Image (cartoon, rainbow, N blue to C red; front, side):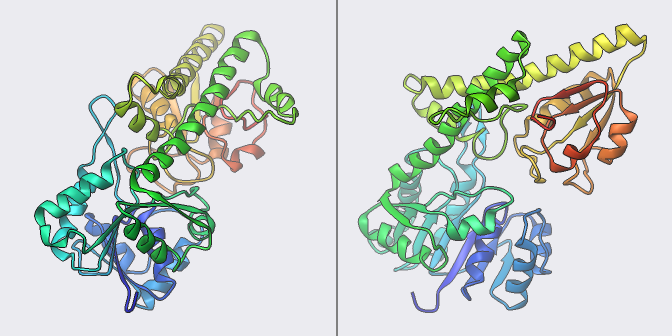
Length: 400
């Protein structure tokens, strides 16, 4: 495409890194976010999230004029949607942000444009957005390309994986698929696998559902081992020495914007068929409830033995180790439960956050020194150097 310009709808954990990577290829990117403070931060060459390498990359592309953030959209050759897809009701996917972003784009679309959804979405979403576009702009039917291409990135390694991971690209027709492939070749070194939009949508959901099922096995195993008096970390290590066994690691539950969410998109559409997927989600959610009850029983035992209420240190609030992302974090469910209980004094620790509007945070070393029960909810690297305490609950393998 000559004089390529991209509009990125959404400048969060996926949208901003993607916009910055595209802009680093000397492609003009107009980023759109509904939050004016986010727009201001980005336009000053700074970032509002923690992600290695992203701060320097954003500063460079902003300073060089290839990335500009705004609360309004603009004309472009390529429009990308990377906005949230939350739940509504009983784990039903809510497409209001995807639809809102699409409707913002519609007036700017012209013949030859490429429209791509990257937001994790239920099967059929791309076709639904295409229908909305053509209902408002029927003259564009057959004149623009529409495709779906889900991200596949790991927080903490987003920049590397955006460039090097393979991508699955599905258009509403073959021409759209090829057009999207040509666009991603501007910044993706990984292989670009063509398919149709529905298969691409399902592929993203299936990838994370598969991981969720594997984690559910590990979490269920941890509960069984606790009842049996077996060290689950040692057991998994030994079992994984079998050449065809690879058991994942248990934890406080499952969080994040993908694994804890995507399986429900399948279940909501295929309730009678998605039995294992649904059960895995239930097991992983139950693990968090089990953790809460385990903490309560340990605290009660301490109180009975010492005639005083213990101080509890909740170590880690993010949804996975060594990141600042709190989305869907099971550790937050644990923290909020004990905050609402108002029974015990709590010390909350999240070393990847310098501050929090929601919680009073304590340095992890101080927390270890001043608490009666140390509760490891997230396996942050900082925790591994802490000395062992007389009462510890390790739900994430810090001390394995």
